[in-house]
Length: 506
Image: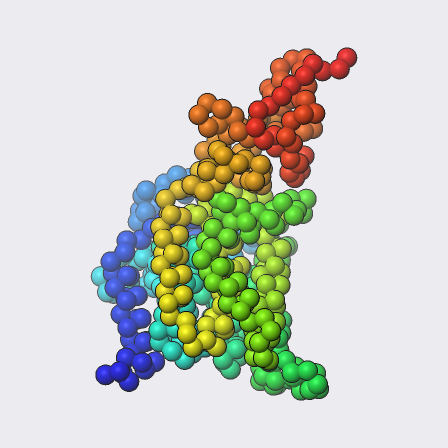
């Protein structure tokens, strides 16, 4: 019996049974960019191409009547405004209409969309089915890497409770990105370059910055196994896994870039979504800090216990023999990969965008750090107590992350804003939209203030806008130099505590 329970076949069967139960028990949740993904899935299911036609729209309206508002823009375009297409849709070559986002996720969902009715299930559970399939692949990949059922199960639990749990039932590709990225890293490190490359390509077809991982997978292996004094060419060859590994990496990278080629041919841009919804002047250190450390949607609030465990284990590795040094090098390389994956996201126009807890980009960008933890877990003999404790804490974190909306501050952020506002200076868009409790463009003439017990503890205004100064100090007034100022980005500025004004100089 013990041998059976510890076998990989038992693990596979148990994981599959659990995921099939969740598929039957959980309802479909249509959150995220629902209009784009559902209509593209219908298009692929109906005629095998991602261009959205009137018949696809009418079927969506009939099957999902509660999405009438989400479909309203394209409804006007297709029925009443020929030749005009409004976001989040766009006209491509041949005057065909497409969703602005890449369509790999929607196209894959067309498979369960066709199959689920055969089992008497809602076809629009297709996104849940696809997400659970990705979790299954991730579970198998971790089992191959760790060679231990309990370690693999705990590691899968940690991966799912680092922010992605909230998105598991959504109509969004975050779960696919998380599973594709972490599975690719696990499979390449365990000697399966073909499967690793295919999964990384799948992730890159929806989130193109994942293509960076093709250059980093052999570097991560080299960082782990590097031996001073050995010829570097021999070590690099082993890290790449020979000619076969190199061919897999090259082929996977080309496959992952095909959606960008498709966009170039159809729209004249390698990324339509990037062209429309990103701006280079939005890239800043403020946003980089926000992605990792914001108290309402940053990566850190999704994996606090995991980060502490990784730090504690890494500190204990210092000064130990060669294998430990390899794990520390691997951690440094994984941190650099995480940073590289983060950089392309910093220019997005809508920074405070539909997050449930951790912002959606941060969920999959964190996966190299989870891989570093998995590699340390693989090398440890005494691990169960700390990992179970961390997993329980992460389950609690996941519960908290599901309790506030993306136009509200997290409980932790509220406490800091109320008692130590100088410690929390979020990206201006995030602060403004959570003050107003609405996802919309915020205006430079507006003033945004956080109040606690009728007392203003933090104020955001645009320093180059006279109308904002008038709102703060009235006509003829000016801000005092004695205020507790903190400069943010794009001309926005915080005042912590009471706003002090003086008479404007004549």
